Length: 71
Image (cartoon, rainbow, N blue to C red; front, side):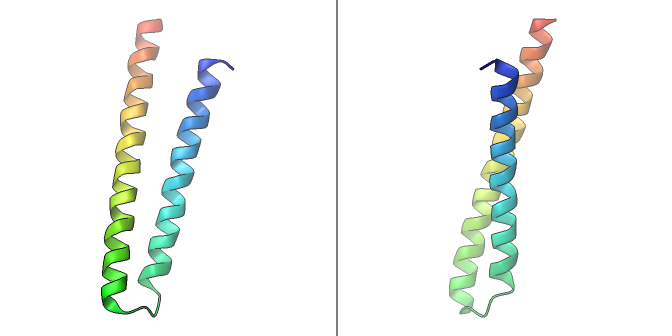
């Protein structure tokens, strides 16, 4: 497997994970759960979304540096 394919797979997987967490966040916000349960779950999901966004940005930055070094 070449590096470009691997990088695309990783970015795709991270993006998919972020979208799933955003959908779950929307579901929790609109749910009829107790407020304490909603608050805890929302905070957890926001944390996961933030970490995934940071991972995407970090990995994309590494790809840019790697591509610049290849040229």
